[in-house]
Amino acid sequence: MFTMLYEVADVLSGYPFRGAITAEEQGDVHVVQVRDAKPTGQISINGMVKTTLPGKRNPNWLRSGDVLFVAKGVKHFSALVDNLPSKTVCTPHFFMIRIKPEYQDKVKPEFICWQLNQIPAQRYFSTTAEGSLHLSVRRQVLENTPLKLLDIKDQQLIANMHKCAIKERSVLLQLIENKDKEQAVIALNLLN
Image 1 (cartoon, rainbow, N blue to C red):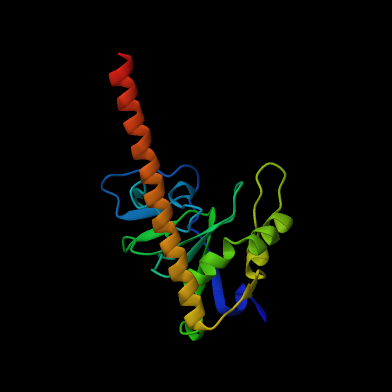
Image 2: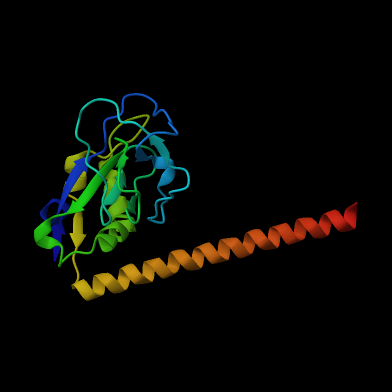
């Protein structure tokens, strides 16, 4: 049985920055930009910019368990918010997905994030994205994304499986990088 995303989650816009985001060492707000989100569903904290928010609009602060969806650009994918600094916002390139309070014990955000990155949802986004130069997914399209909700235990199993796959991928990439460095050292020693 399928349900629509809007039935179990609210979809919110990112903070409306106008123009480039100015990095400020003394800034009190961290900003997640598209470059900080990974197609694996992770957010890299290392490159996040600190700034001071322009304007007086009250921001939607990111919370652990929110899902960020890259709505503008070539790739449309989601990333899970987890262990970010307390005063963090995202740019308007994202939609922020927050599980509704009445579904907190029925829907795992990690599972929603995983499902939005899978082939069926990706096909849906590629056929509904609009624009000629830069494709974007409208809020209503995202809200109407069909989701298959499993038992909460099965959702957690899939989320755990995905976490393990990410760790495995990271280890394998590190091994490849180490092997490339080893080959470079051998080449320098032999060929110089």
